[in-house]
Image (cartoon, rainbow, N blue to C red; front, top):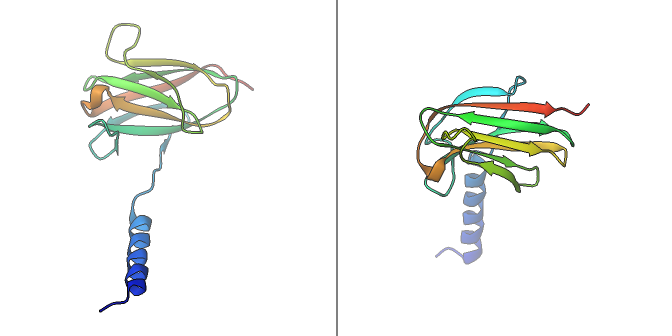
Length: 140
């Protein structure tokens, strides 16, 4: 019979090993030209809504005004801007042109590293997409 304390210590060690071997959340830095052509796959971040998301890291300064364009011919897009504290700043499903592409305007009120999240509407779909972040009024 194994004493309970030895069993608990053994299980604690196993848990710690499993946590260190798990992949860490690591958003993809947006390239210097602020554009990316990429693919959303079933290997990306599970959304909990049956679909997947791909996150890009971008640094903004206070006062910047930006527009984010997300287009795909393979799935209905949703773009989400997430603040450094994890709060959703804004989200858009369909662009003003009536297409299923997404366009999001934002004024940055706090400087820091933001997440631009690419996901499909209603968790439906994967495939190629294009993302472009344009700084309309950059701050020096």
